[in-house]
Each structure stands twice: as C-alpha cells, then as structure tokens.
Image (cartoon, rainbow, N blue to C red):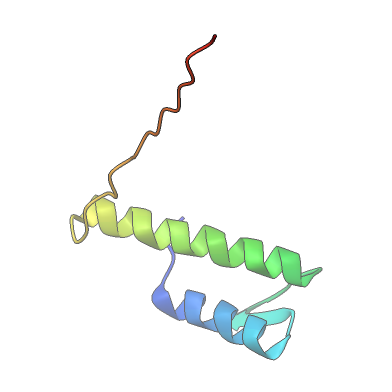
Length: 73
C-alpha cells in the first residue's frame, strides 16, 4: 500500500493531541488504543521509506552485524 507524508502527519498530530480518531481526506479511522496508533505510525514510516527506496530517492540503510565472542577457558 502506498502512503503519503500527509497521512503520517495526520497520525503524528493525533498522537500529539491524544486523539484516537484520524481523518485522511474522506476516510476516518478510529484506533482502539494509543499503542495501535503508534504501531500505525511505524507502519506508515516504513512504507514511506520503502517507497523512497523503490523510487531511488534514498538509499537503503546499510545493515550492521555485530559479533561478540568469548574465549572459553
């Protein structure tokens, strides 16, 4: 699904004001809890990032692997 920066802004405004109802154009969504709203914000942020990567406007963040070892005695 494609997301818009306006949708993200509306979700963030709702979170800042404590609202659980968000309107996107002609659609209204009511979230059951603030945790659901926070989860939706994460989904939209990841979606926007993936859209930007697919469009070639930003590069994918490099992955970093950290290996810790301990010499057994």
